[in-house]
Amino acid sequence: KRRDNVFSNSDEAPINKKLPKELLLRIFSFLDIVTLCRCAQVSKAWNVLALDGSNWQRIDLFNFQTDIEGRVVENISKRCGGFLRQLSLRGCLGVGDSALKTFAQNCRNIEHLNLNGCTKITDSTCYSLSKFCSKLKHLDLTSCVSITNSSLKGLSEGCRNLEHLNLSWCDQITKDGIEALVKGCSGLKALFLRGCTQLEDEALKHIQNHCHELVILNLQSCTQISDEGIVKICRGCHKLQSLCVSGCSNLTDASLTALGLNCPRLK
Image (cartoon, rainbow, N blue to C red; front, side, top):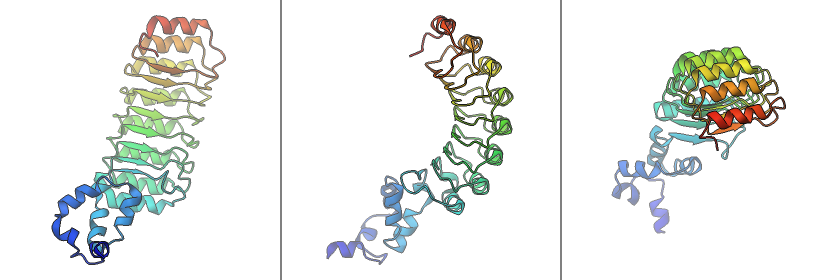
């Protein structure tokens, strides 16, 4: 009976009388997305508190629901606004450029954005991020196969705070895109280029010249890379701790020698 009283549909339930809204809001801030949605159905008062933008700073839809449409992302962005810092849309195949443009316009303080497997997005999404999301630090574009060099140029112009970028399996990327990217995003600490099969040693030269803070570099299956490219990386990226060159069949012992001589932090 007491439980029914506390969780009644009345906004005058005891818990609402005894706890100030600020404290309830603080409690709600520790809840996950599923629990918040359930709380929003308890009463009008809890609906307002649960859906307050301050509770939605970090959202991961992967473990909640991935078969969402773009309008869901648009509604989330309108609800969260400038509060949202981290959003994962990993595996959300139905989300496209239009929804992410609205998202970028509404959530300009976003720092971490995971679009892994969002195969509908194109360069247009990166243009939107470049225009509105200058605070972006972490971006995952894994398997976004429509992404081209134009995206990297846009990111370099508007997202200069990028520290972590995953371009794995974006196989339209070439050395020109890498050159544009690193000139504007010289603070990159982690760069994943798995499966970017068009990349040659010249791309690594650009990384050498501009990415002196690089700690993690993944070149798995970049089959055109040779010892010459790895030597360039060794000479410019002395802070490197992790390097993946699995599937780079052109490499010889010369690469290992260069790594040993120039990258003392390698693990």
